[in-house]
Amino acid sequence: MNSWERIERQLTERKRDITREIRSFPAPIPACDVYYNSLLVERRKLSEALQRLEKLKLDGNASVESFISQYPLIDENS
Image 1 (cartoon, helix red, strand yellow):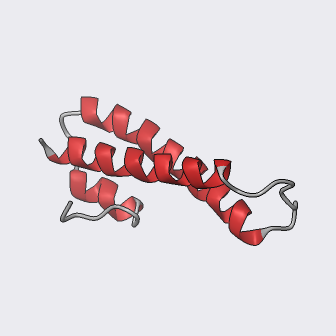
Image 2 (cartoon, rainbow, N blue to C red):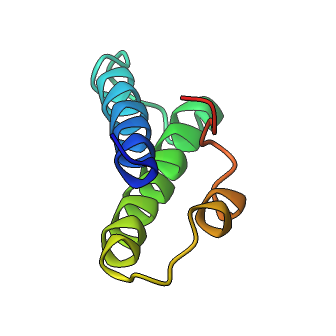
């Protein structure tokens, strides 16, 4: 598995975990719930990161290190 695939797997797993947590949030969801809102923001950022990753995987000049520096949620050792 190359570096891009490891990053993609890690982002996808984190997004799946957040989505699962959002779905299990007790109803009704108060609009002022800071934790819930932070999960929504993180899920959106992960979606954006996955879209950017797809584009960069096709670019032979793209740097894995540069991508990782933009997305601190990524564990370089995974």
